[in-house]
Length: 323
Length: 306
Image (cartoon, rainbow over all chains, first blue to last red; front, top):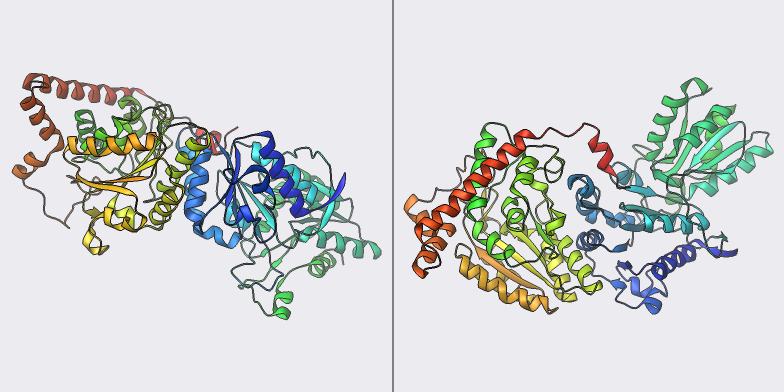
């Protein structure tokens, strides 16, 4: 075990995958230089620029390149520098990668990992801060991962590279330099398994990505007041580990779903719908959602701070349920 | 070429009888490009195409039976009825995929070319597209990237002068696709796409060079789409070519005339080749009709690979 930043855990997971399998290569804008957050730092030095390939700023084409290489026997890890830019690649992601296996009657597989990062908090404005995972969870054929801990990022990235399907791996820029315990030889974590980070009997909080830490903070505050919250990180959105969430809700009878993305049409709505269908009789109160308001993300610091959901909003949502 | 011609004409009739499904885009008149290019390729040379792809798939080796059954949505279709006319794939023959989104196929061909290089193979990737795709962002991004990385591939543009319903002149000021890519300084040529010999020799040079690892290349084939954009298109936007003019331009008849003149075959041998194609197409129709539809659960089964 050693203490690693999230970004280092991602970086080392890529290096391990490249050492283990020569079909694995990395491509994206500025990846040979390490990128703006050092996610790919050092990879070009170890593996050369034949396998760590800088690309022009052509998100559509480079995504197509990754898909073509994947269906021709390679295992590309494509970096889209900001999730906001995935809009330019959506034809390739949604129409090509996600559908190739079905449309070919199973002849083609696209073992592609598309790494990207989202999240606000750096005053970067509405085009460099979004949480767009729900756009991707709506596309059959994609798997969507969104780990919040360094150790989960390492274990899930290993599974993503080994998966025969296109996997979108959504990181969060504000998590990059947070440290966590990571095994020296991380064990792959199965795609589609949630993790329970805190046990509790009074309410279940399902939180995604950056809001997992906020959920744990809120849970400590609630605990001091006598309310014990169970905190679950699904880690994978598609396929979703509904069983772990439903099993928890059947014990706590209350649920709060929290994510940084816009609440309206967010992935939380899907979790809410699934849980109410599976555990309606166990619910003692309507399910609460925590998410961002239905506006683009402002730059002005007090406005961005007000925009971002966090521990206070999760706490307030729980209080509403248990009061 | 007769196999493609008769296959597509038969598909046109089947469409009117609702036996083949969805939007059907026929390449009748353009067969010379598919045959002259794909005829020179190996099974491990990856080929991508667009929505007008039947000819490319058949020329690359896809079986008529499986393609016909696919258009009919049957379980024994080459993609088990899941892809249909615009999304044909025949992995075994290196036909890596048609795509219904204009231009969306182009960058994937670069990926297959890159894979060939990384794997140490001398396979050459080929992508077919129409002149309508040239105005798409994917084309321009891809030409830039392929030249920058010097990928072993050939861009093959079938310039039939019409992007869907609209003449090229209404979409761009640049008449020739080979001029669009001029600043990238890739080797390129514009040939008469209805002259099978011209396409063959133009492509042969590029293929040989790409096989040695250089590239990319662009071959623009000027051709004519005899039918509408899709089956059912009344094609009011242009005047139909006269029968006499088409007799002169038809790539199959032209090659046949030349073959007889040069003594490669005589009229009766040519007729026998055509007759063989007609029979193969009828057998494909029977194959398709005899195949059942896939089980409803197949879509769920094939959404993810395991």
